[in-house]
Structures are given as C-alpha cells and as structure tokens.
Length: 252
Image (spheres, rainbow, N blue to C red):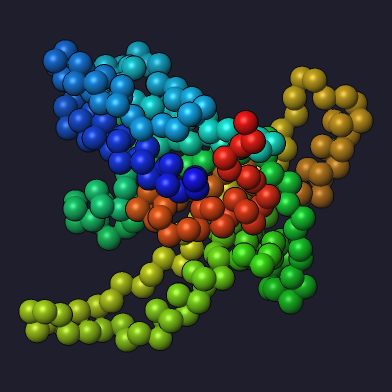
C-alpha cells in the first residue's frame, strides 16, 4: 500500500467535513452532530492517529488539526490547510478557488517530518545564486534556495511530462469555436519547506555546539512538504519519500 492511496482515501472522507463546517458558521447543534458523524467515518489506516482541534470557537472538536502517520524511523504529521478568521473557517483547494473565480491554485495539505530530514545537499557551482542547493537521485531532483527556506521536488517522469507540455501551443480552439489560452502547468507538485534543526532540552553541550555550527553555516533540514490533494495520485509523493529515504508503511 502506498501513502498516496491512503491519503486519497482519507481526504475523500474528510472533504465533506470541511465543506459542512465552512457552509454553516456558526453551526446549529444539529449540524454539529452531523459533522461528528462524518468525523467518525474518516477512512484512516491502522496505526494512524487523528487529532481533533481543541479551540474555544464554535468549531471546537469539529476539525482535524493533524494526523500522525508512522513511517520507518520517523513520523509524518499530516495537516489539512484552512484559514481561521475569528469564527470563520475557509478551507483551500484548487477546485474551491477556481469555483470562486480565482485563477490561483492552493495547496490543501501539508506533511511535516518528525524528526526533520537531513539531506546531503550538493552545491551547483554554476548557478547564479550562492545559496542554491540540490539533491539528485535516480528518482528525481530536489532543488532549494537556502535563503528563503523553500524548494521543490520533481521526479524524472514529471519533468519529462512538463517538457512535453511545454511543446504544446499556448492557444487552441475550444469546442465552442473560441480561441482559448492553455494554462501553463504547475512546475512541481511537491513544494518543500526548509528550516534549521531546533534545540531540545535533552541536548548535550556537544550536540548544542554542533547545532550552532550548522546554523552558522546555513545548513537547513527538510521540515515539511505541501501539495494539492488532487495531485496525490500522480505518484510524486511516494517518489519524494523514496528520494529522501522515508519508508512507508513503517515496519510494524
């Protein structure tokens, strides 16, 4: 079983919860009961641990704040993306944004890695930015800018598909006979977030010294990835996990 299949099953069962919360604000007690029923029907594989948001607002106990997913050597923390503005909840996804007339696609899920992943960054001496780093493998390529803490992963299959897409004309004739503009495809499905390794209370003086050296040298770890749920089935997430050495499911 792949993580993508499990994520798809979970997300399909969770979207009705987000829609119900967003459509009724604040929600009557009868609606709360219906959402709690939907929450009880979430499709989560064995050993996944779902945590429900504890908040003083009306949606307390009605939204998932995180899902802990066991993997070999670490945990993956899945977090649905939504915005809170007082008592208003708005969840983001590409379909929702396009329905409301916005051309901007939004990521609607994040996965955080605990502990963070320490990559063996390679420096591209020919790149114009001094803080540009990469991580190559037989599966794909991760490129990052250490300065802004952002990066992106693209598998070789995805890169070839993008190359073929770029060869297509930008304009075409639609079924209605009108001239249409072909939207450029998003270059990478997996957006990567970087951060420094954070100190912990149980660190020895030697470990703390190593941490300070890493921060001084600008060394960054992979802390999370962010992606659109509709792209989960493309194979990129599993390729990314393999790329950085994360095995799912964990050995039980």
